[in-house]
Image 1: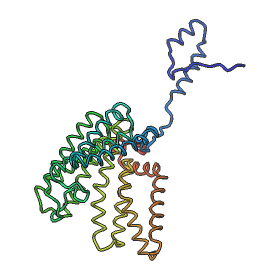
Image 2 (image 1 turned 180 degrees about the vertical axis):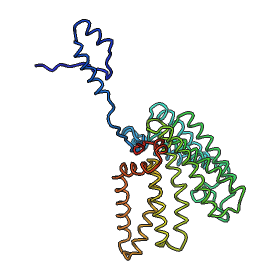
Image 3 (image 1 turned 30 degrees about the horizontal axis):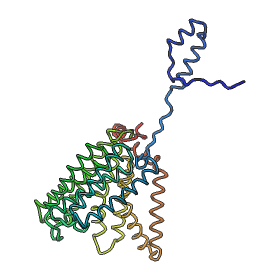
Length: 366
């Protein structure tokens, strides 16, 4: 018997059509009832399976990598060649302008993910460096940020002006191209502006106060990231991409000052400081599980490796401290990755039901 190709049908039965089929003798009432039961079975919701993996729109194809390589070569060569004739300010401004021009094609027309990210990053950095150079600030990475009092850094007001100008340019870029990472770039520029203004108002700020300001900025960025996350709990819109980049910015702002302070409490890391660092990393893991954002945890992995190395060294395995540290850190990451879903469900079930239900992918809220 030849195979019969049936047209695709919708999961919902058209009861008016079935009634006409019964009236014309095409179908019997019993057959219509059986079809109705079948339709309800097909349309019944399956057990909920929540995909709580972070989906990132980095690459839409190998063309993204190819184009990004071309962008790096082209803009790098343009900066190099323009430096002799236009100077530092002019060459930086030229690269920023070229990055905007390339975005008109690769971002606005082609909608290529990785090239759009690279072009925005280049535009923001080169804009900041161009304005900094115009204000007379050295553009070397060693002096590109204001520091605590006595560090030898120039006056912070030019930094504030450069960061504020970068914020304005990032806002224009987002209005034109709507690249999700732009929000994080603007948040970084705003944080830089506020930090520089703090140093301008209180020049005597020490390293401890600077670390506290960084942590405060990171917490503010984290709160903004959660606002975008909670507005798209199923992570299906542009908001989830914006939240990812904000989390990626917030994590080092929070983690680096805290753990650096702990590790620098003495001449060398001690057993006590290593245990404190691992405690902070475990706390980060808990926050990462609750929010379903691994980016929060990644920022603390380097410090976790240092802590593992300290504990292994103090246990007497000095000659093999490095490989054993990598082994412990890798085992920690793999264990967390393999049991992510189960551990996240366990953590969410320990939270109040109303709170858990509002989180992204509330797999343990019921």
